[in-house]
Amino acid sequence: MKIAEIFYSVQGEGALIGVPSVFVRTSGCNLRCSWCDTPYTSWQPEGVEMSVADISDQVQAFHAKHVVLTGGEPMIAPQTPELLAAFKARGLHITIETAGTVDANIECDLMSISPKLSNSTPEGPFQAQHERLRINQAVLRSLMRFPHQLKFVIAAPADLDEVQQLVKEIEAKPSSVMLMPEGVEQSLLRERSLWLVEEAKRHGYRFSPRLHVDLYGNKRGV
Image (cartoon, rainbow, N blue to C red; front, side, top):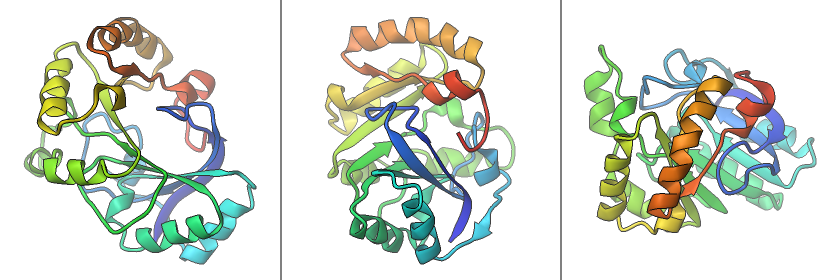
């Protein structure tokens, strides 16, 4: 499978924020978010072909207890079920980071689902495809069979209307919903966080910072 990078860091988002984890980033995505912070896995996919055994061995070499399979969109890779089984056989805690548009026969300990709001839709040749694929309620409900979090990228207060509507339609628990500011610059993230945390309090949702950006800036492999 095509892998953009494997690195050891701390989880920067969501319920496991701060937990030392090995990140396996697949390359390739079925969406084209306008604000994508990993364009090297979607708009211009980079990476090298690796076997499941080689990926698993590299992850094991870090001696971490948590592994995060991310992307791009890891759920579109045909080898993902096999890779997750290899991680499970090694006793690793598995988080999958996905947009929630594709399901598969897989296993994990935390399904971190980030449904894409309309603020993600790009202009240009990918607009129609992205808009058609970005929300699949049947898949979202299916992925919620796992321990899960629904992590929404918020750029403006008006985005909360979409969040509330989707949460209602898929019957998600407010306690599973996380609001995270969009951006890769520390100053912009802080500006948006100040009002976004108040929205989280008002709706009974959770707030998620982007710890890795605060610590390292907008860099790869951190």
